Image 1 (spheres, rainbow, N blue to C red):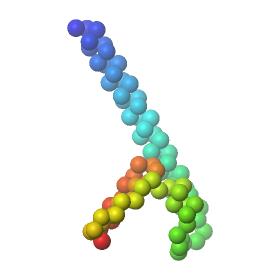
Image 2: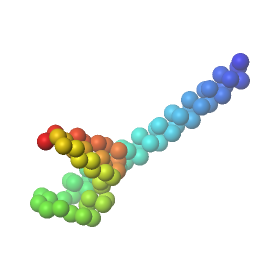
Image 3: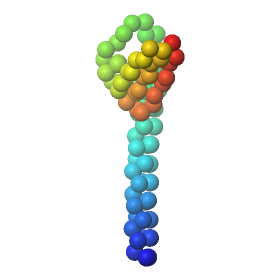
Length: 80
């Protein structure tokens, strides 16, 4: 019984460690994006393919909305 509890606690510890690493990576990518945006000296007025490839993971289009998922894991839903 104690062995099962030890294994369960080890699994929980590993999951927590993994979750923390994923969250830290998301925060890092969000901070990188924020820093990049702040460094821009002008407004973006046309599509920039290199920027899109650098930051966008996926765009999904529905009849009434679309969502944009960044590589950081952040998703933005936009109603039409």
